[in-house]
Image (spheres, rainbow, N blue to C red):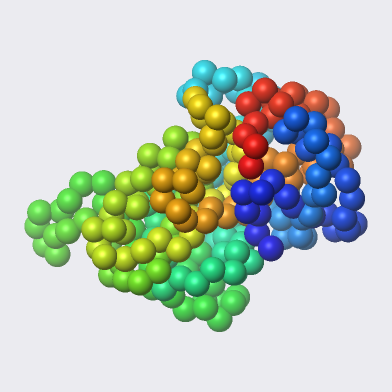
Length: 245
């Protein structure tokens, strides 16, 4: 199944024990083949990079993740298939797909296509404008009406600002959020003890799923001979800033 916020995942060799970054505790890490493939896909397009990166928070991270680099037709089509698989694996009911502007716009479009083409799931989709349009058709939403149960698609949750705005739009439309799906769960605390994802769950009582999480990424790095050199830095960073999800 898709990664949820419990910090677990798998490998294609089967269940094994791995020292996860959080408090160096031992967890079973499960990851399906498509999750392995997604990480390789992200590395192939330099979406996932390793080294030293200064984040907006001021922290120095041993990795950086930027979905904006999935910037070709082929890459976007493949990305949609990963989102669609993770959404199906999340096993939640939804009536409409919603992509918060701006990064959510291509994500919701390609995921809707992948769901229809590869899973036989034909759902309407929409996204919002940052500014309300005062002419033509007007309004703030483009696409299908927001009705019923809404699946929100975004790349990551950093401060949770975009998700908070999306929740307000959904509530205003009289609909209800059923799940938030992101590409990577960083499993990282904000300024307090909670991660941004934990804060979303607490504030809005909605599940958050991801294609992969940081614990799974660490497991992937540890198993790849070319990437093993970065495993120690990722684990150290997780011990310092990791959340307890």
